[in-house]
Length: 201
Image (cartoon, rainbow, N blue to C red; front, side, top):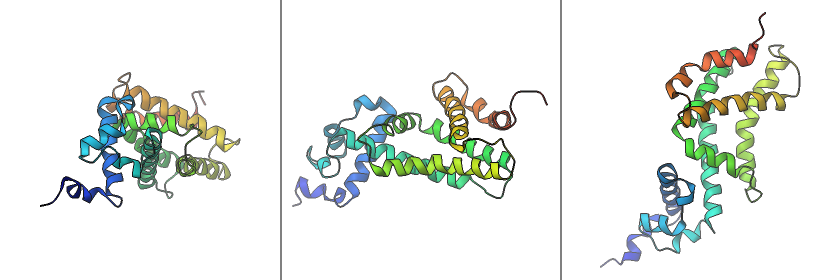
């Protein structure tokens, strides 16, 4: 007769890690980061309290892994939305809409992603993942500068300004300071203002 230990065996060899991350994201979404506990996650998925230690040495390692998974998903969402063949404004509009949609669907995860990327214990993988999202946008800005479509200047500073505006809009929508659908519908106008400015021409 199979023992309780053998019944948990399907989680081993990588499946346990995936199960822990899925359960952790569910807890994060429902109850916030303070409620995350490796012991409780183990109980929720039916493994021994020591089992998560094979994959995450502590809660901080779990948070880093959650944030890394979030950046990987965000990168896939942005890649799927990007069409280098489009003119700058519709291209950036599509990317902005994809970012906002991800933010609305994953508000708690996005907050964790931004918190963990500055942590000194965050892994090199995290820096690479952050670089893929920010770096892709910075490259679009740099390319547009070379084509004379936007002002010259440090692409990193321009990317920061654009990213801060998008992220601020996402946070307003995620915290009910702005209706989410209104935020999504307003992306074309927001991008137009970002690219052309407020000064009459």
